[in-house]
Structure formats: structure tokens, C-alpha cells
Length: 208
Image (cartoon, rainbow, N blue to C red; front, side, top):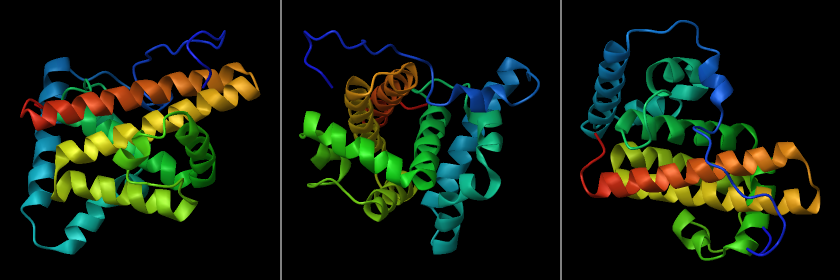
């Protein structure tokens, strides 16, 4: 990413990482019912895993999006703000799914971003730029930690990963200008900021 005084495009703040996923879900349920269902389902999932001693339950939740696709989660959670539990979990699952499906691309962007903001590497979990297997395992650990350990820390770490990848995407856009990379950088930065905010809300006990 270029210095503040450069002519590089400034990040905007879009609503979500992949809005087309949510737009593909047909129909508009009653807003109040949808909100209640989003919160109740997210809390039930979190509580159910947290209080379970069965490791298979944890692994099923970890692979929830991979097995059933993001569309089911989108129907429940994608309309929720990042400051809510369903909204935070939705962003976490989308980021996790993208890393699992596009590991090489993510690592390429991460390495470029880690040169720009190296301090966030430690928060994300990497002292050195990772390889594909490392970044995928780390996102597994982050998602697992959201359900079995410290939710605030998991969201904060995910926010750091998204922010580093956003800056790397912007750096690559500077080297090879194009509207697609710029838009991706903007959306990734928005997601990183939203996850970091959700982590702060969780730490304060205000992630409803």
C-alpha cells in the first residue's frame, strides 16, 4: 500500500466481504422474525459447542460452511450488523471459507501486506509470512477458538488477518492497477475493521 500522500485510491467501507452471496438468497422474511432467528441460532450454536465435550461437535461446526455452503448461513446471518453475534460469526465464516478455497491467493496478498504493516503479523498469529497450509490451519484455529475458547481473541485475530490481506491487495493494486483489486481491498479492509470492532464488543460483553 502506498504512503498516505500517494495518489492510490482510498478505501471505502462496503457492507460485507461478498455481498453477492447474500443477494443470491431469494425472498425477504419478516425483519423482526429474521433478527430473532439470527440471534437465537447464533447463540444456540455458540453455547452448544462451548458446553460440549465431544470433539466431533466442534469439527462439525468448523466445517459447517464447507459442508452446507454459505447460503444457509447467509439466509440466517448475513443481514446482521458486525456488532452482533450473528453478524460477527457470518464474517468469520466467510473469511474462513475464502482462505480454505483460495489459500495461494490469500498467502500472496498476506505476504505483500505483511511488508506494509508488519506489526499485525503477531496479532494474526504469524511471526513470518505463512505458507498455504499454515494460513489455512491458522484460520481453522481461529474459527475453532471462537466456539471453544476466547471469542474476542478469535475475532481480533481474524480482523488482523483480513486487514493484512487488505493492505496486501492494495499493494498489488498499486503495482498492477485495476478496479477489481481495489474493490477487493476495500471490502477486505471493511471486513477486517468490522471483525476487530466485533472483538472489542465481545471483550466488553456487548456482542449481542
